[in-house]
Length: 549
Ligand code: NAD
Image (cartoon, rainbow, N blue to C red; front, top):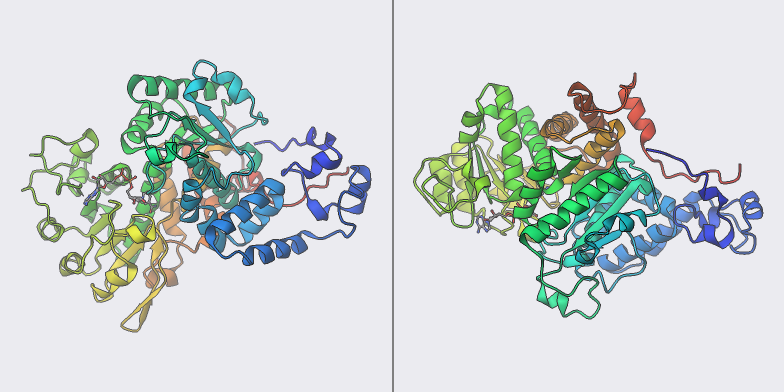
């Protein structure tokens, strides 16, 4: 990470006001206005950053719908980045659902229609064979984190082609907000290989190539050229693959995880936050991970990532990997994943066990007797009263995670899980739910948001210049995160710390991840004497630099 802004300070006058990284707007001091040729270009009164923050919140407060609130915030990011991050950091709990899910989903659906200023890089099939020059067009030389999507599986919304760009932009805003990754080191990228969304191709304002998606060898070669060009132009960058369709997501991770510094948040970040939830469950029940029996409802990228990480961690409780996998079961759209099913994809096969095939979820729960039921199916309301009752029948504290997003897709609500289990369920969801009072006791459901994990992992990886991102790093992140929940919150069934504490949580996670990097010989820097303070010092703070020296 660098903070070399010397060349920026050569900028003067109106150019300074039009550069969101340097612009302070009405907060430029009289001295700065005089020396930078800004006198007269701004109204005379000098405001403080606090004044500016109240003005931003005032305007924001007048917006009547979330998409307008999103456009308002992105407008601020385009005008004055420092102020944008000040506001975001100080109001993260309120603004997170606007800059990221669920509002970012709506923003992506209408991306061409709300388009104002370009942000990030677009690499399309037309750039094959000449990506190097394209990447060199990016104005920053020091890029630490790239979030890249091909737009095929944007949140739960499917193929949004280049409209998916809202996701890398939003994720990187969270990297800066939650873990202090300097904004100038963040690069959002959308790969345009076409779209199979015909409605989008008929949209006159669609921003991408008007062709069906390229598949097979041609797609693989395109991705290979992209990944290798990044190694060449931005050799220190961590690549985060984001919102690729399941098969591509799993294959790309397999292909690149040992070759370059990369990870997939939908797979590994989800796994990290879910493992943290289960480790916090153990703090409530005084149980062991190795004693859990898990049933995944849904057998895609998220289920695979979570199951693989948990199986690996169960071995720490003395189980062999095979024994661990035997404690994990999958249900897909057809029913229970069992060894007699011949059509199974490879990622499901390792969790296909000998048992009778069954498609009814209540019967499956009665047959398998899981301690934890984890919903990652994208299918709403599948955990019915009889399913929850069957879970509560066999367990004193049934663990029910309904992780499908958005809220409308959750397998059951927090209230349903608590009520149908007489308040005994330990519940977490993918989207936020309000606290619920059952039998006079108020329970606080946890939101298993990946933003608890990926920013801290990213900070630990880039600050140590780690060669690879390993599952052990996500396990360390999960362990750390689970340890951050205060006892009174655990007593109320909450498995994660309040999100407003995210910067401290991310720092702890980054420290744990950096420890793994040093222990495993993956770090490419000397170990600092005080790792936590080293990382803390690397975190970006949204304060106005003194431009006049
Ligand atoms: P995916 O498309 O890779 O997998 C979905 C899986 O669900 C597939 O295996 C499919 O066979 C299965 N499925 C579909 N219909 C089903 C049905 N009726 N019964 C049982 N299984 C069914 O998607 P993914 O990336 O694994 O994400 C799945 C869900 O998890 C999404 O809703 C996503 O929002 C959510 N998710 C949440 C978090 C989080 O909370 N932190 C993180 C990642 C994903």
